[in-house]
Image 1 (cartoon, one colour):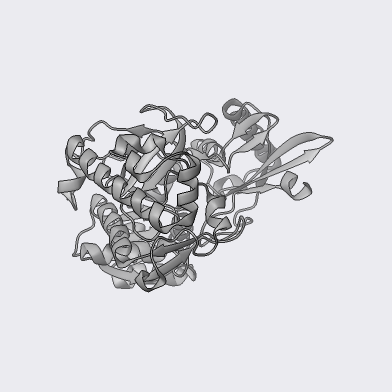
Image 2 (cartoon, rainbow, N blue to C red):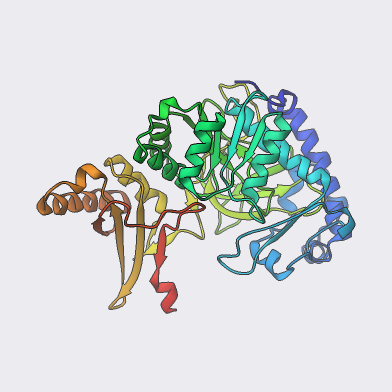
Length: 434
């Protein structure tokens, strides 16, 4: 596959260290001088900008968390005056007040560059049509891949989400080469292609970039089967930039991080100490390449590990494993840590479609967990006894993986609501009762 920026993506570690060091020094000075929150945070920690001499000094700096963005809503963490801003984005606000992100023209270019690297790593070229089914608007997904496609020189088709049969019609008629959306929506599009009686191999589509929610390698294979494409992971979060912070290459052996703009660390979420390569912990990013929102050691809550060895594709930038979940999405059920991605993995291993809902409750002071799963058409035709046996088989597999019992209830096909954005996988009634 072509490499969009080999001078960075394949640079020596010494060169990357020099670039990161220069950018961290500049960024900390900018944050200290222009963001009152950071001036106070660094002063309270006894740190001055002059104490930062290289990227190795990043461990001296304090952490930033999401509540810091909400406490300074909307523009309190911006390091540039309003006249220098060209774009505002924000998170969905589903878990609290929105987190607002600002971009200078330089920041938009950095973001587009990361998305272009991701598209190129998936095999996209300037001759391709990129069908963008992420939502447009304040959500960063749509415009992130849109600008990345244009940066690469490809043709962006800004479809946004919704009206799935129309999406399929556009895939057919416009000759889209790449699809960009959430993995759950890619599954829905694939199911729609199947239900419309369309042979996916008749589509020009050959690849897809899917992110914005956790998904497993089993789900990757299912998407590839339904759409007859190669499915690539893309990682990002609005606070850092948007999609394009890290991305799959053809080896699909970890996501390459744009570490010249977003410096990653993995820390123990309890001790806050950095962890060595290969150890799982909480992912932390410092935005060394951005002007408007220069976040310092931002705790993403994503759980992953880092690897610095050179990839078989030739890229030398650090790789992060696919996040195995988020520390704040993690369910603690009877003292056991459970991630929805573990449930999805078991279901797909057993040949079930990844349409499921986890319901957690508390009865008689005891946590309960129920997994509702849609039957695929072949299972739906079975007898009641066969369905009950299938439920028991899934319960046993979940018990083996999760080390707790979860009741399984199989539902008729198309019972659970489909999502055009991030799929809702968990209802935790314990929180509602609190």
